[in-house]
Length: 125
Ligand SMILES: [Zn+2]
Ligand SMILES: [Zn+2]
Image (cartoon, rainbow, N blue to C red; front, side, top):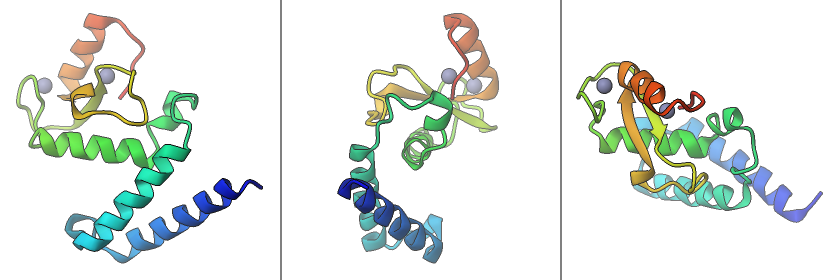
């Protein structure tokens, strides 16, 4: 087994243990920083671009991007301000694995559907 793979497994283990110990909504700052550091490391060592998109949507990385995007949007649809179930939609797939905030848009279910009908692309988050 390659060393990087061993390190990756250790980090994933540490990360899940840290996450078990803390309330996700009230990260102690140092724990949060450590988690961010681990996640950044994992991001760099994971091939997000070549994994199936369905798998990608389940990664801790994407979940984090999605949560940050929703927080930045004040948990409202960025088109109609609805506060229902929100999706994080990729405006571009260019930066998969290291998205900038502008690469995604937070949409409610109805707006998300409209969006996809308009651009007629494969459904995605
Ligand atoms: Zn909407
Ligand atoms: Zn979408």
